[in-house]
Image 1 (cartoon, rainbow, N blue to C red):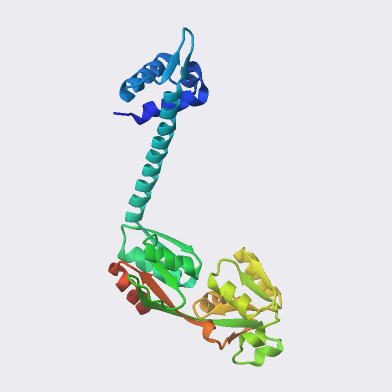
Image 2 (cartoon, helix red, strand yellow):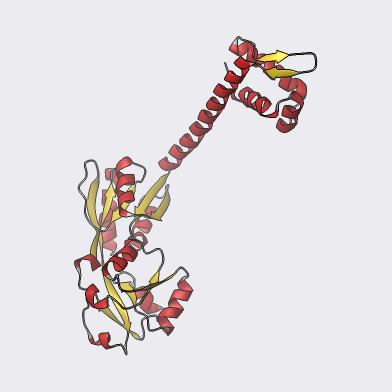
Amino acid sequence: MLNLLELEQLVAFADQGTLSKTAEVLHLSQPTITRTMQHLEEEFGVSLFSRSKNKIQLNETGKKAVEYARGLLADAQEAVVQVQAFDKRLHTITVQSCAPAPLWFLLPVLSSEFPGQTISSTLSEETEILQKVASGECALGILPWPVELKGVSCVPLLEEKLSVCVPEEHHLASREHLTFEELNGFNCLLLSQIGFWDKLCREKMPASRFLVQTDEFEFQELVRQSALFCFTTDLTKDIRSSKGLLARRKVIPITAPEANVTYHLLFTNPVYRTVAETCRARR
């Protein structure tokens, strides 16, 4: 039976061209390489080399054997990768979300209810989330709307409502509600990694310019010191307020259906159904 280690030596010989260089690269003795080449010929049952007094080289059959050897080695490596990935999935709950806030509530619940599992979460586009959950590549997905798809369960998770934060001295601070149309044209601060909210604000406020901050500290300083509008939600307002970020700003709800979302949890394994119920109860 063919041995992968011997096939690796055959490929190395094809790449290096001589037994001595092959032995050097593989940190083996030249006699060991020689015995391997002989054993491979026995396994294939054909001659793989042309031999002269001081030289050995692959013949045409040997070159074909090298092609197959490369394929077998690549397949073997891919098998290792796929088996490891499968094992990781068995012990990892993967979550893809359209926004960060739902993860703040969902991840602690998962850790509590599935203590033996590793939790992995990422922010992703809505279409990717749906595809990955449906294909089984992702255990749980979070979307800002319900979906109907065969084989995929979809249950309400949490609600989140968007508000704009304007300086107290701004003329809009007297308002109790605002629309995206009224905000369009005003420049705003945005944090990076806020999921679908980024795209929504840009779509609804095309005349506005957005200063996106990747650093939380820099974002907070700009909120405190600048007159630029920023955004918050009912899920993040308490955090912002506790840091004094909104002390000199009026928090005004945005009256638009798109600004008031109900997140839905997607899954194919019914074991996760109670997770959404627990999140809603803790909220």
